[in-house]
Length: 318
Image 1: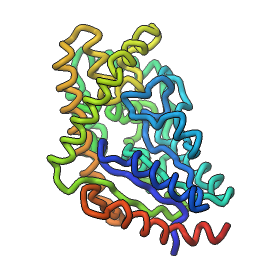
Image 2 (image 1 turned 45 degrees about the vertical axis):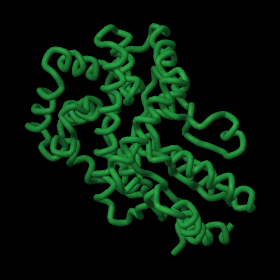
Image 3 (image 1 turned 30 degrees about the horizontal axis):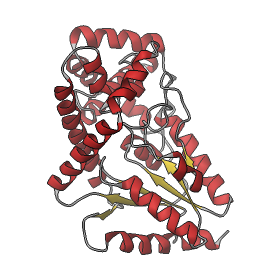
Image 4 (image 1 turned 90 degrees about the horizontal axis):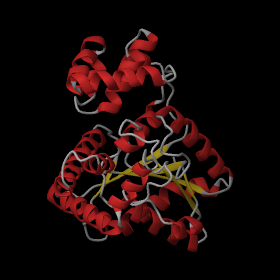
């Protein structure tokens, strides 16, 4: 059975966006149009271009991209909103006789799309501020321990140094009186069939080199100046979800005087490697995932042929 949509995911720095752009342009030239749907929690924000490796305007003019630059950094985006937006877009893109290509590495979003999203209580700014204030006094590991007492299952999945997910899990417990893990069991998965490919170098050291080169390139392109412009707005703080993105968080702390630029870059590099490790761990749990080593000879052409086979039925139906 042909896929109705394709996802190209993988750890940060593996080259997903470059592969997707190349594929979309080549298929467009062949009369097989693709539209790209971002699966990235940072690309939704305007003004965050360099540190997110956002596709440039010229590419986006040639190939339609979705869920990019849809929010101001002062706003919040959620997995639930992503599932609703992405499900709608898949239907709209297929209705235009085109193929949806989901690209990105926010595993929370991909998991929510595949497994469904629970009907969770809406966020409370007041409660989140209260949790943030407690974290400032007590530390996130202490709040993680509290989460473990309220919802052991959720705490086992969330790293003690993952403030955004700890905050949300505690918020759900406080607002609903029920564990997040319990609410998440009552959810409906994506109705469309999604073929999934993970782009990841087989050699972990090769991935680390890619990550280091990408950060160096971002710094040369003006990443620090981009973060400075965001900070100079005056209405953003390190507590905003947009500024918790890897790289932004460390450079923001540097601008606050917490440590020097060299240390900020070292911390950003370490955090990016940790993110890649967590992404790979989740990807390995998906038995339907098909793996691609970008450094293997002929890897891109082999993937392109396989993807065409997956999507031929979708195109034929339209």
